[in-house]
Image (cartoon, rainbow, N blue to C red; front, side):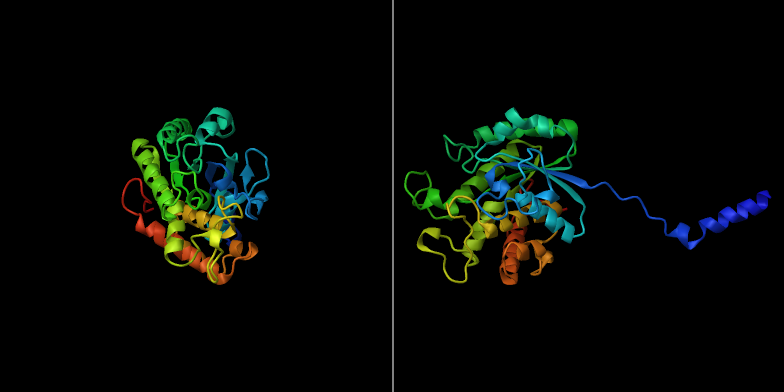
Length: 301
C-alpha cells in the first residue's frame, strides 16, 4: 500500500498539471511622487488622466505624471505600484511639515519635485531645498535604507523669461532650466541620499534646440513644432508633461524611452500623433544619455 501511494504521489508531481502550477507573483516595486502642480499635470488633460491607475494619497483624484509613468511601465512589462502626494504651489518643506504622516512608510523609489523657482522669495536659491530634501531623505531611509531617491529639475518658465520682473527676464529660454539643473545637482552632492537628478528642464531645452518644440509661446507656436507650456506659459501642456514623464521613466527604470515606440498608448489617448510621441521619446532618451556618469547624474541600472 505504501509503495502504491508513493507511486501515486510521484505520478501526480510529474503530471502536466503539477508542472504548470502558477508561480507566486513578485510584489510590485513601489514608487512615490512628492511634488506640486508640475507633478499633478495641472492645466492639462494629464491631470485627471487614468487617475484610477495610481494611488493619490490626498484623495484629490489626480493621475498626472505618475499615471503616465505607470502606463509606460506597464507597456515595458514592469510591475510598479504608483502613488502620489501633491499640493499645488507648495515646496518640499510643506510636504515634510504638513503631510509626512501620509507617506511615512517604506518605499522602493521616491521622486521629489520642488517648487518651480526652488524658493519663492529668493528664486534660484537651493538652500531650503537642500534642507528639506535632507529631512525627507532621513525619514524615507528610516523606513527603507535602500530607497532610491530622485530629485527632479524642472523647466524654464516662459512667463518668467519673456515678461519683466524676474531674475530670468530677458535671458535665453534655456537659462532658467540650466540654473535649476545646476542647483539640483548641488543639492544632490550635498544630500548624499539622493541618487540622481532627473533632467526634465534640460530635456525641454533639448526639445527647443532640436526643433521639436517652440521656445517662445508669446509669438505663437511655429508650424510643425510642439508647445510645451499650458495657456499660462508657466505649467506644462500635454506634450510638456509627456516629456517630463518620459525622462522620469527612463532615468528611474533604466529603460530607453524610445523603446516605447510611436504607437505608445498614452500618447494616442492624450491626442499626440505617432510622430510627436516618437520625437519626444528621442529627446528624453538623448538627454538621459548625455547626463550619465556622475553620481548626481542619471545612473546606469
